[in-house]
Length: 201
Length: 182
Image (cartoon, rainbow over all chains, first blue to last red; front, side, top):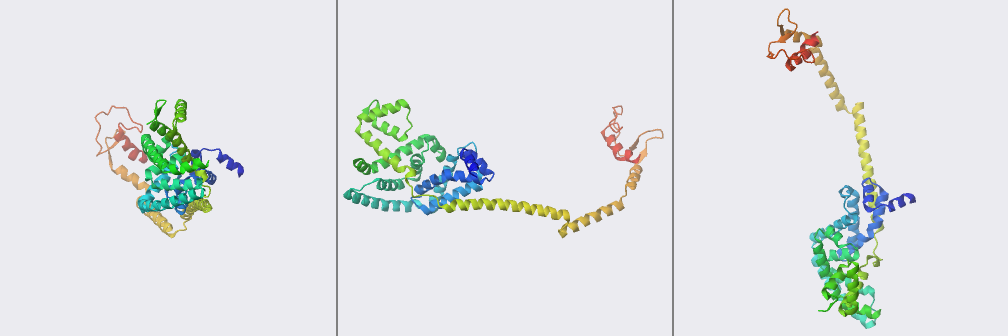
């Protein structure tokens, strides 16, 4: 069994998909190990921290892959393909429930909370990275869907500009401008937190 | 707007954000950062964002263990459904072959009765007589019998065909009527 595992561990994602098309469970397990956490965290951020929904989406995406592995084009990169599906699922979800409005309201509320936390932390001199992360996620949730997905694919998932343009089906120039806008905006909003971190370090 | 080493601060920000620099760009950006406080601050902001975004830092978030189990279960179900449908198909074929299903028995007996009736009405010897009656001999010393309704082809000197006829029309006449009667 462990020999079988190590056999699959050496395979590329695309080769594993070929095995999955033949209903190999070990191939599924290996792909799941490689991508489940990444996809879950992407969903978590895209769905504004809704953990339950992120878990449901994670199950759905892997079910889709298992039930329709023939839809994967072997000339394509698996990671690009799976993130394209993940992004489309989030897009459909926004459309279906019109969550943007709810998310914006929630984001406003959380920003207020984060600001309050920030001032408490400042007064107690206990500002740490955890709070910075919370503030970062709040700023992220205020971005539009396209800016947020570009930002997440770049900084959370470490995709190249070219890969992001493949996932989002847009030009590299568009990716660059979205990334530039989103990063500048977030950096500007988080300047006060960054200064605090620099002072503490 | 600060301009150091031929780069404006905006350009530096863009380069830092895109983070796909070649060696020469890298050294020029480094040189710019040494002399520009604003860009140094931006680089530091960006570094904090990158660290904050690193998904490995969200340790508490892990996939629910049920997900893997559910998917594997679904894979098993799909496999057993496929196996079951194959077994069902095999059983149906077997039923047909062994006449387990009444409708096939009835249909088969119907076909057999029909064949017997056809055989009794048109025995093979009668077919030969009918074929012979449809022809008249072209002459006493003629070797070939020709049916009345067949057009005689002008080019009668052409090379005889496989069955001894002069052309394809005659050939079919030979094969259909004359040879069986011989």
